[in-house]
Length: 303
Image 1 (cartoon, rainbow, N blue to C red):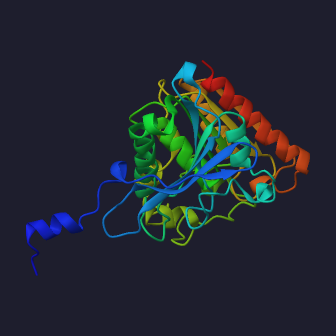
Image 2: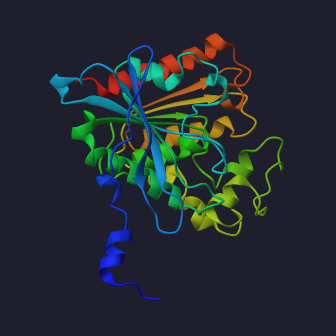
């Protein structure tokens, strides 16, 4: 039945840019956490949220606000949570996002629709909407959205790279940990040879694009960061394990080569002995990957 316009207006929620912000939790070590801010409300599904980790002290006034890290979680586009930087850091105290906030960054841990909810490009649409929300609310949150680094691991690295390469508002850099960067070449790079069937509609990548890679090569190309590389891309730091059994090292190398060919600054660092999600590394070596990425983020957002 049709509702009267005044009732429709009453029942329509305000846009996310006008919703109240969550109350902050004040954590040890000088960190504030705003958990569960709604940044997008696509019709017919759950509202999409982000958590925002902020330094407790006043914002970085000389630069107009805190630089921002937009973090995108892994999980094969099928699983994962916005508060997770990967299994090797789940027991860190303080956690990795709190560490970044203590280092002077605002950190947005972002939800996005999983492939069981929607196929690509919904995921890129979501993280692009999160970036727009941060720009809209920058003044009240004390953010300097001229200084943003996209950072992701695994499937999140794929989305972070796509965000950095396609965002309507430019970002300052991208940190990509062991992500799939060219879906069309994954089958040929799998080990042992033949381990990846491009005609299989049940692979993580097929579920992302809604069809087997062999049946939808145009969709696979469109969902691949290498397709979107231009000379205007921001600098990249790509860390990828030499022994990665899930996403071959050649994927990171493929994106690095495309960036270099376009004249873009890229630091590609194979991590010796590392499997996917930094399995096989010592705790100290995992810390080194984190510290390397933090140094990159600092360099890219320095005044």
